[in-house]
Image (cartoon, rainbow, N blue to C red; front, side, top):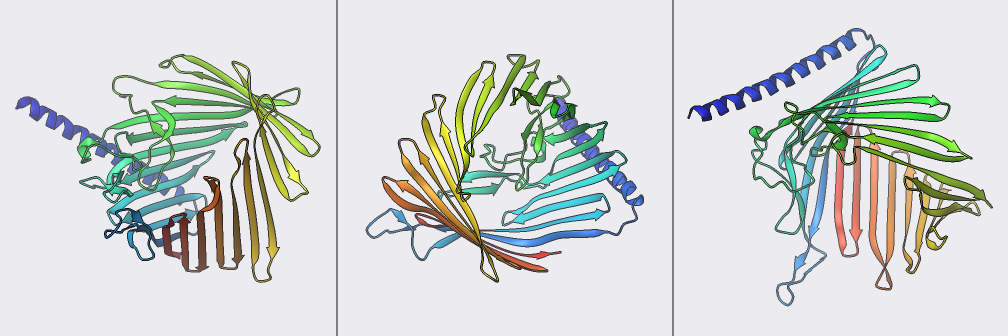
Length: 440
């Protein structure tokens, strides 16, 4: 009993410590923002959008009388999703505050608050993320669905602080973050049935990036990861690069790696790059890589090839250029200069008086397969109205069939904005999206 009480007390103490730390960070943020506002005399500018997205997916119809096979039908039942969002940016001269929040049928999704505070030669960009845990599953109707994980609390997920500055031609970017590394990925299945506050586990990390031009045209870049890496942890509807290292316990050990890269190097007019990576906890500890590209202009066509160092190898060649100033052509060749494939595309613009029409077409050729597919698209714009459509046709068992068709229409008549988009596949309607919002 004493041990259980001790653990409970320790957990409560850790939770209070985490909450106190978050409250301290928010207080520091507000102080910095207040300081930035006091030194500015510009008026407040607010812009953003408040709107509703409605997404509908048709469900196949089962013919019970003679066939159990599900088939598309003219009349269908829809799976419907509704999301209400509010996004705005408030600026005072160079001081900026961004707000991003959303709710759907399952309840709140996220609240993301970001700032940008210039302080002399540096700029501080604080972020605070709150979100409800979601997961992606396959439901009983064989639809991929995103569902909330009980008890569906709006949790503090992470805070990110970025400090940027330049001096003497050297750019420095320091990202510090504290985040819940156990927070469920909304794009994947989460095995536990619940995710309460007690399941959270916070880790800190930092990524320091320094970039400078060591010689005209030659750039040296240093990336130091401390208890972090360049990946991303997402919440419902939002993500950003940079995440705390999940397997590192900051109370017991430390983890880092260093990457140095040189780009813009040239030898005999051949550009190349070199990258070296040091990771004391990896095998091997030291890794070096490099590569380059060979570019030659012949008969208005450009020949390019990719070269890798350590060991030296050539991955292939390609020709690219324009024919009759109307069609862009790209031809891929193997290392033995054998034909592998080609792509063709063309675009043009037509003045229709009240509207401007943009047309685009593309096709591909693959060695041994012929033409696996081609597509067309068109778009028109006129003042507050815009519309577009696209068609894709592909070879399916030696028969060319339409595999996708999409159309989109939007009207912006401030302060209101409307948009409608539909997407069809060979089996019929796949998705319908309608949005109505207020722009301010």
